Picture 1: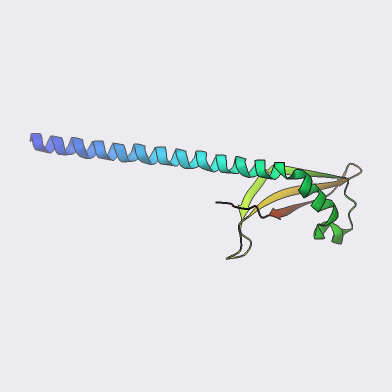
Picture 2: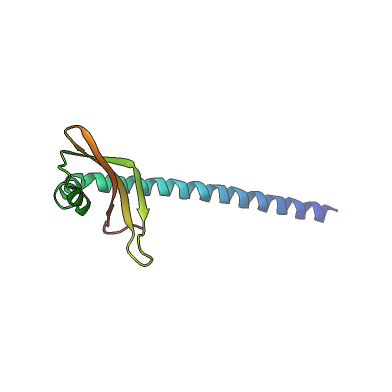
Length: 118
């Protein structure tokens, strides 16, 4: 009888341990994802002037539309990792709003290929 109680206790203890490890692993993964997104946003913000110059002068979309861009606004909450082609590189997608004389002209996404996205 005592052997059965010991086995039950060990089984319950192992099950509880596995549940606790699973919960802990999930929290660590969530924290890592948040940290990675913060690093991606910091990378984009560090290159904001270059992105603005590109959008104003060389963005094919802006040139096709014939926009005269006075101000560029970035939606930092929209940053996400995308892979546009099956075996293509991973890129960061960012929502951009362009303005002229305070009037919103258009909202579109730009795709940036950083050196390394894990």
